Length: 234
Image (cartoon, rainbow, N blue to C red; front, side, top):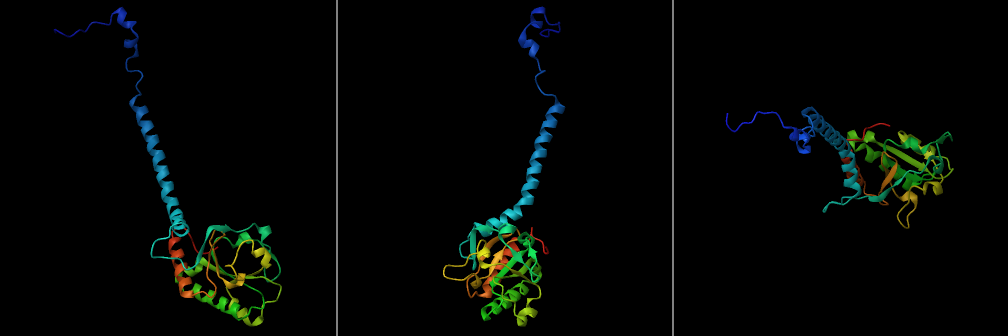
């Protein structure tokens, strides 16, 4: 057939480098498929990680960074949140005078009140509001623990003990507690409720003589924002 040369390569062609290169440098089809599958597998792993981490990142970003117009937190956000000091720096003791590790408080949201053991009228009111606002959270109440830090050696009055059922009562000198919490200027530590997140970071302080309906509103928002990653029960 004219125009078609079926003869074998000449000796010169066999020694020509351009002819010798041929297609051997191209990857085979199985190798290309393997490389493509590897890239896709890595991409899927990154997507799974992002999906798992997104709820935690989003909820903290919303409350620590984003301040949408028209919506203000009632409580003061502590920025950055103040991490719980090491166990040795928070010498906590229970009612039997046994040492309690501060780290054992992690795993739950903590609504904290601070007062001496004599517990005056303002202290009693704080403890009452602390109980009531937690109850109003309905199904989310089991995600919040009530904590009372007693800052002196005065015995807790017998008259208020029945109302302390379900409250974690721990003693700690006020100077040691001040390593973690601080009040508004001109206020004592006992003037506020303090909110601690499940990681042990103090992240919000409510005003003195707080409006408890507004405290509930902040707590409800936080429970909703953290619902996808926070579970009830320590």
